[in-house]
Length: 64
View: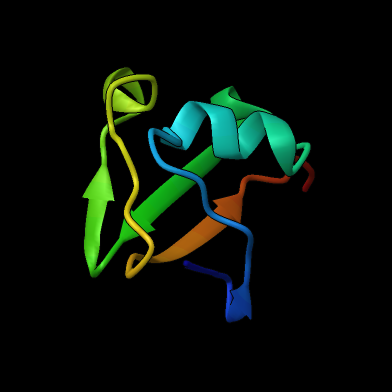
């Protein structure tokens, strides 16, 4: 699987939520796109990833 342009270790049953935790992202402060489609935050714990998936994870940053 590719995350933000880098190959990452994948294991069967890996969910978006588990990936975010493993990569130290804060789920409430990111948007995740899988293969060109946004995954709703409510589906992070249900969305199972495959080895062929290409993900973009974008972190929201506060400030002015």
